[in-house]
Image 1 (tube, rainbow, N blue to C red):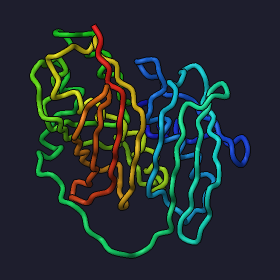
Image 2 (image 1 turned 45 degrees about the horizontal axis):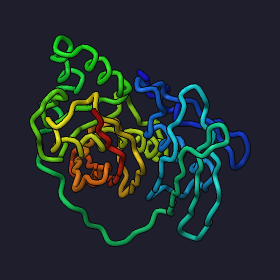
Image 3 (image 1 turned 30 degrees about the vertical axis):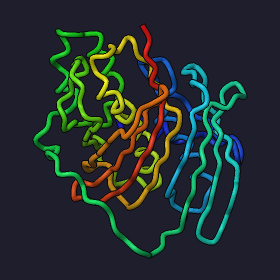
Length: 287
């Protein structure tokens, strides 16, 4: 995907009836439906069933089965609650009449109340960092297949700039922390906050689970590792603009029992905490 319209078209579902929607797939190089796509599309389905004055403030999803790229995904939306301030929906993503993903989303009217946040980490700004694709150019000769795979993973419409040096071939363990700036490479002035929520959900699936692997480098290589998301939770705290840089500050406090766990906080460049994310996934190694 090279344009914002292509990303919006991917995330905007066709309405089949009042409770059923359908979408196409982002053609990933790893041959399975991308978790971020399902998150964004499920959120789009839910948004199509709530009043315009309700904005998502949290979502909790579980990945059940691997999605197939050659089949569209249908999303069935159930109304759990329509309250005075809060609205709740449950979404089931289906292929071949089997659930591949379920998610609950809570929406809220904009209200006033207490306000505080933790500070943004003090890291290098995006202006002095190279785009990830440039940072990976050294792999073209060292490991061309790995270079092709890593640069094909992310759509061109999203630009990522990692604060920490990227070296996927390194055998040196490191702290389970990662800081990545990202933004949409196009003006998003015409997008609603609901659409930006869907794009942020899509982008939030990048960089999380791999952070749990960093302390274990050198114990196995990439060909001996399988990773897949199990669940994903997200909280939207404040308004934001995705055509401006945001910082994804990620840490993995635990990995055990063939699972890795990661938390992320997303800040505006000015330091406003706009969203929080948590994810757990399978990390299996084999010989």
